[in-house]
Amino acid sequence: MTTWIRRYSARERSNHWLVAILFIFSALSGLALFHPAFFFIAHLFGGGTWNRILHPFIGVLLSLFFIALAARFWRSNAFIPADRVWMKHIGDELCNRDERLPEVGKYNAGQKYLFWTVVVTVPTLLISGIVIWQPWFAPYFPIGLLRVAVVIHALAAWIMILGIVVHVYAAIWVKGSVRAMTRGTVSEAWAKHHHRAWYREMTGK
Amino acid sequence: MALQSLDIKARSATTTPSPDARAKGAIPVAKLIDISKCIGCKACQVACMEWNNLRDEIGTNVGVYDNPMDLTDQSWTVMRFSEVEVQQGRLEWLIRKDGCMHCADPGCLKACPSPGAIVQYANGIVDFHEENCIGCGYCLTGCPFNIPRISKKDNKAYKCTLCSDRVGVGLEPACVKTCPTGAIVFGSKDDMIHHAEGRIADLKERGYQNAGLYDPQGVSGTHVMYVLQHADKPELYANLPKDPSISPLVSLWKGVTKPLMSLGIGLAVFVGFFHYVTVGPKVVDEDEPDSADPPRPSEPIKERS
Image (cartoon, rainbow over all chains, first blue to last red; front, side, top):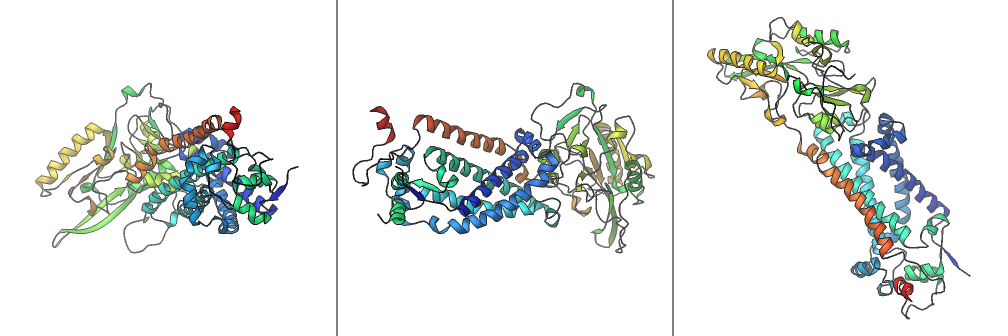
């Protein structure tokens, strides 16, 4: 019989999924303005004008919920010396040669990099987004700053989208992970295999 | 509204060709503003208001002739008055009619994310189609002349249309029609350059050694041109930029970068998919032994056995 270990509380899961849903909305509405190839997405939000109106509000909500999420998770994402060793074995991780990987705690170095990427990009997007937010804030900034802000905004969004693509893929790739965010639990074997140090900490074994 | 009698050369946020079946016959037009002839009467401002049915708010007099003080969604053209001493002791009152320059390489159109909100007609006029405008303000970042204004009423961008609705039916722009001194003339761009040459020769004869035409090549020329008494120093005319061009940031943002970035995102998904079907998922055996010491079989090996 499978033994389950609690990985995320109901609050943590709700917080994560609020950010995830808001990310999908903000990424889609943002892509609509990113390149003409994606402009059709604006129709999902009620057309170009509604897309423009909604996008910044979605972004602000995302930022608020992400701050809460980061406050919950930042401690377990702090880098430790062992992360450097793990990064050297990134090839083993990608080729599923898991037996060669060093022990990891609650998060491996790859997960930590993802976390800190989002920690950097979300506030960057928030600040650059406020600068170009029509009609509320943009009129108070000089045009030179708007030009810089639109480039930074697009670049940060791109980095974040790429990061989330990797994040989502990793969840699909590493079987048994999605359950941690849907039900809050992972199997004992999963914990032992992927996060042995965390497993020992949780079970005392 | 798109004027069907005018052919479209370029359309914002559109990657396929614009309707230009009839474009071959279009003659590039231009409005020539001879600053040496302008008396600052603002009749052109009034004509613009009348034709386009615009009524700006009545402001307050701050002790200068400029009125209104700046372009707005309701004022698509304004007189800018500069008192300068180009030569010591010789005061000159330079009056420049400011408004959209109708660039041949329009930065606003390049920056706009909404398909068809900004169009460039085959005759060179750059027009905003407000019904397609989403109010994002990107055109402001694209414009090297700081012309477009977002309306506080409807959050759409507005600017001079070069009276595309008049030009489309063979009339000259309203400001041209009303100018009492003939400082504003309108015609084909070639004719306007020719006309300007005559004016420049005349100005040079009268002591304005640096008189010249303002048709900046940084934006591939403009369809609104100035005759300047001091063409070597356009900044004298209320900071008319000497060598305007679309900001490199806008080119970076709207050039090849975004298609490449889009490709990058697609590629990331693609790589992920093929990683899954080649390397395969990480599946943990629920009966995995307790100790980490015995070698844990990796998935591919298990599949082979």
